[in-house]
Figure 1: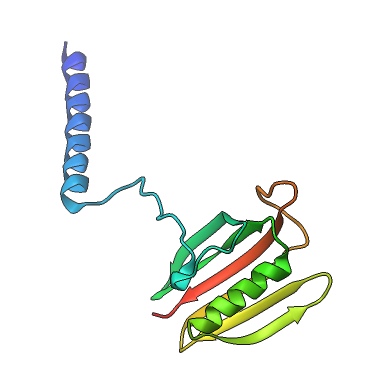
Figure 2: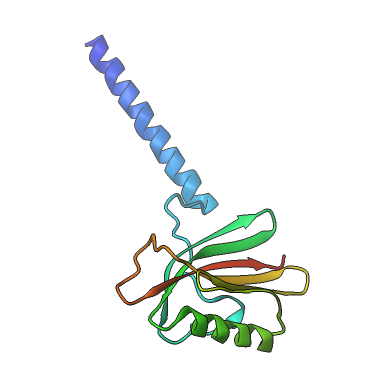
Length: 144
């Protein structure tokens, strides 16, 4: 009988601890299964025609917000890069680096002291890129 009461006491203590944890989490607003916000093209840029987001990771490094990942396009990589170069220049960015080789095309742009955008073609596709699509790598950094 004593062992039975002792076991019930331990179960009751565990239930009370779990209830207390639930109350703390609810009151503090913490969530353990938060989903990151869906990625939208940065700096109010439109999505290039025939292009879609494949996978993008968004994260913070101190006060700096960053994102990197992949886009897929049914257009040529060259056309999509040209599209974004023109859009970024219209948004006040300066293109400071360009590569235009058969194996890889890319550009990098910056605005002010922190906004950064780069886009490059990828020779190998590692993600969910469909047949007839080209993978593009995107890197974004937002000014603090």
